[in-house]
Image (cartoon, rainbow, N blue to C red; front, top):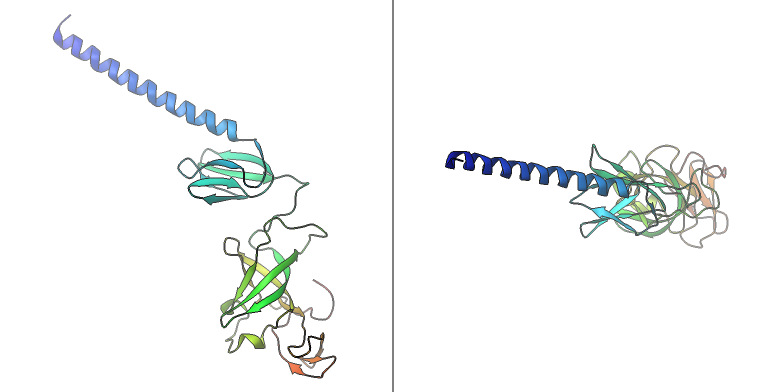
Length: 221
């Protein structure tokens, strides 16, 4: 065998080995994805890394890992290299962008209102798995300039709002059917009744304003 033939044969083996290794690596990656797809997981279970996949529905990222945010089964999307969790029907509901919630104002700052989410429209008597403390930024209160946030919301008020950002749990009340559905007097904390587009305290008679939902006082959410 000539040196040239030996050299060519050697090069051929190298290419073959490299190709075989590449196929083996792809096969291994495919097998890992296949094994993870359909696995049963609970909140907090590790399901992959951000180097392998993108975080899909009902998952969250932490320190380079991807974890399940709810109970369900995993599904790997090979085309988009993403992994998601599909919730089981017997687990608590999971808030998504666009959902309508009901919550109570727990704090007021110059540019935002803090809200504790109590429930979501269409969900009855079931705890929401990702109902974290939420906020309504002053820019999302109404479609007009807000001079003073205390003219729009009061402490302990019950509000109806739309979820616009799940990651930071931001809410919006700018639509006509969103806003305060039950207000409490800032002086004596008694419920307030609607009187000619303003609110009057049922106990001390104080008049206040709010960004009211169109269904205020009807009990309809």
